[in-house]
Length: 89
Image 1 (cartoon, helix red, strand yellow):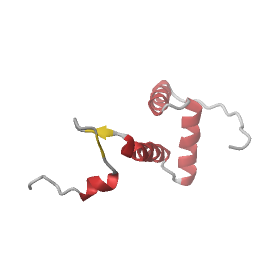
Image 2 (spheres, one colour; image 1 turned 60 degrees about the vertical axis):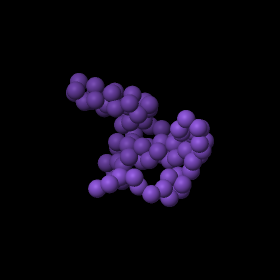
Image 3 (tube, rainbow, N blue to C red; image 1 turned 90 degrees about the horizontal axis):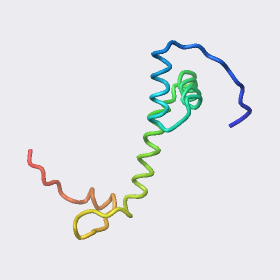
Image 4 (cartoon, one colour; image 1 turned 90 degrees about the vertical axis):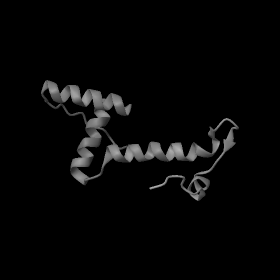
């Protein structure tokens, strides 16, 4: 990140509570939340979705190390997709 410039903004109490709650839920500072919101407004990026996808990718990368079932089987994402569906429609 380049040189940071301090800005002061004014918002109503409801917006402030919403920003604080959303930043807390994302595990980021309110300043970072506002920077992402500004970037989204300027570029059309989806910062919240991008962060969610990043977290999902991290979990998928860990998937082979996770154990499931009482026998402690190891599985890969590819193996899960190879299994035939047991659902009947």
